[in-house]
Amino acid sequence: MRQSIIKKLMKRTVLSLRAEKVAAKVVLVIKVRIHEYFRFTADLAHLVAIAILLLKIWKTRSCAGISGRSQILFLVVFVCRYLDIFTNFVSPYNTVMKVFFIGSSVATVYFMWGKFKATYDRNHDTCRMEFLVIPAFLLALVVNHDFSVLEVLWTFSIYLEAVAIMPQLFMLSKPEPQKPSLLITCLHLAPIVRCTSLTGSTATTLNLSSIQLLWWRASYKRCFLLTFFICM
Image 1 (cartoon, rainbow, N blue to C red):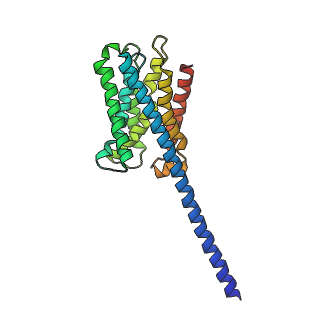
Image 2: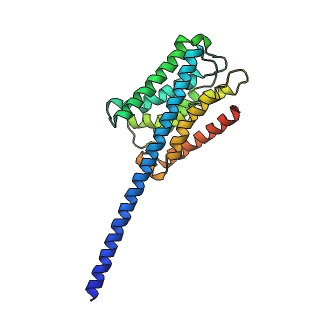
Image 3: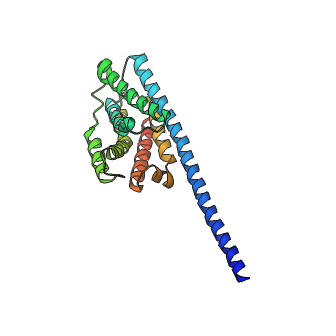
């Protein structure tokens, strides 16, 4: 009698443990799926922002109100983040987006510093890029998931993206330049959506430490508030 009771209890325990494992896996899959949807939305917002930016420059033949320093920083961000394009294949979508982000950033920098450089307002675009790049790189050397070249550069791109918009905001704080508020809103929407989707589990899945996640979110919240007040 006792043996049968013990066997029943053991079966119930095993079943409950299996149920907990299955539930944990389901929750993790749901969180990862949610992150993927947020990431798609962020990519779409970034595509819209880049399309608006390139169309604005091409149709007006002018770079007025746009920070060339921010565009250089974004180019550095995408190049450092997607250096694994030749070594790590995830999916056709992932590869196409990597090529598009790098290519569009190169085109934007070329328009601003080459084809339409006469319309670029250098006098108001005076934010010191080294004050953003050097701290982000030093922080990436100290706080990273793995001390390898690709991983350090990937982490550096995360930190730098959090502050890459600052030259644009600094330029918009000046009274004279035009304020492309729609462009700034779209540029901010992508990283904000990405940060919103990063919970503890998905951050672990994406190799983000708690310090990286906290710093990334705090930086974007600060930039978003600055954009809100400047573009009002």
